[in-house]
Image 1 (cartoon, rainbow over the protein chains, first blue to last red):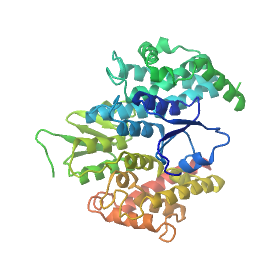
Image 2 (cartoon, each protein chain N blue to C red; image 1 turned 30 degrees about the vertical axis):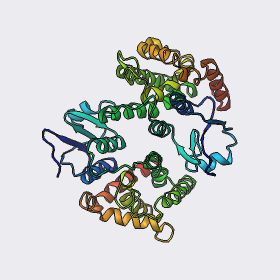
Image 3 (cartoon, one colour; image 1 turned 120 degrees about the vertical axis):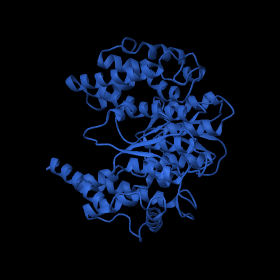
Length: 221
Length: 222
């Protein structure tokens, strides 16, 4: 990569991981170039920028690539530290923020995928697991405005893109997020009041269309 | 050893866990005095379950009554709480690179260890690609952290004993002096460092444990 000045984001429109980066950049008011990748035909630039995983998102800042969405978000927070801090300043609060963002990383997408990929008993097991995950997050949120407290923070950025997948999870597995985790449901609505989130998140119906397309692709019915 | 007044640090661990070793190395480098509690993973203590209800795993660091879980998160907590003997890079980009490799360096190694045939070949290709990139991070440096051991050295330090053990059991050499001169030198320098040298269980004991795990997995497959 030439040492071009500026910020570029290699991404895929519906990726919740890419959306984390977009939300963080928007919160900070950073100008950047968005490049949509065709995941069935990855660009030379992507393969060079992320030779290990060959995945999006990749943030390229002044020609230098940063990979892995949560690492990208922390990087954005540290470089553009003058505005909208996403991480708390206390070491223990920071550890908690990293822990729950990592929890979302480890659990939500994977379990969510099993909800639409599987049927019968296996799907029921995934549904039970998703409800447990949502309830753990519900307990973590408590009566706070955001996971970060009064300010929109790291865990909020990590989790909020998945809220546009709630409709797909609910439809495929027949349950209600509001029914099992009402505080999370309210929090999701509150987040949508933020411009960074409203402008970034995919429409839940479009996400569902995408999930249906994937189901066909994987031969799930 | 640093022991601030009224501070209490306890580490819940398991003797052979590479994740626990990371925390031990960090505590050593930071010269933090701590109490170690060995867990019986087949019969976890009530305290461990209380401190890590989400994953119920080791390591858990308890500091003045509050618990932190997940080894890499513990490392960053240690760095931010005890300011001397810094282990993280200062520059945000270098931090991002270190954080990336902390998890990516091990990609494919476990797969290589527990698979056979075509699956193993694929895992090996991935491992070699990663090590070639990782080798570049050592150019002009003794350690990933520069002159001194840092966060990335600690995070991938388990490779210094893990890879030789995997190589021994699978009878396949990955990190040779020829193919990966810098990684090879790093493994030796890391193992011999004052902060690492006396921390590990006997190599034979570790090797035996990995072999048992490997045999159990291989048996299940066949």
